[in-house]
Image 1 (tube, rainbow, N blue to C red):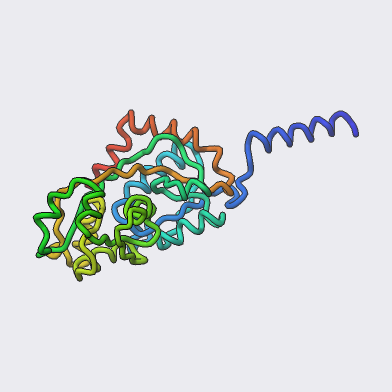
Image 2 (cartoon, rainbow, N blue to C red; image 1 turned 135 degrees about the vertical axis):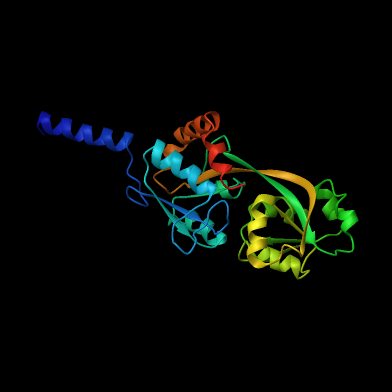
Length: 255
């Protein structure tokens, strides 16, 4: 083999090592997301909106120059598509189970407060408003309504033996609560208002004011994806966006 050919082969190997080809989606990162305003939503005009969408677009597209393509689907399917390698990434809470098939970065880009909701006229409302912990939910014998694929609920509610009733779509939890199919929903107040207004349920649901926990949100990239190598750089970009006020400016447009 001639010396020039050896040099070419070495250069090709080095290029592939330092600039890995994205095995799933060519030059486009495929991101799976559910309909969940104001995190992400796709109105009838077909243009995706939501502050998670804007934050990730600013970080990936504008600052890291990584082209993205977003695919809306039910939340349980989002997770499965990342698990089997059909999608590259999703934005969620990094549970122990999700980290068996995903990699992520150290620092969350958003903390989602989780508060207690119940239906109007609940005969134990005064007791519910005194709840101070998840253990109190179990002690009180309450039931919780959630959506399929809610890893936080699985890790923090179901594993304690607290009965949970599931629906396949996030927004349907409020219809179930209004119909008294369970005692409680544990959710983020900012995202609740839009769902209640849309379904005409605002006068049937009570926000108790009880803060149970906060859920850290991360970009999770499937271990089968060729994009896992960007996570350290993504974490640095997110920190700069927090420091320079970019994330705050995006969020205040939505609430």
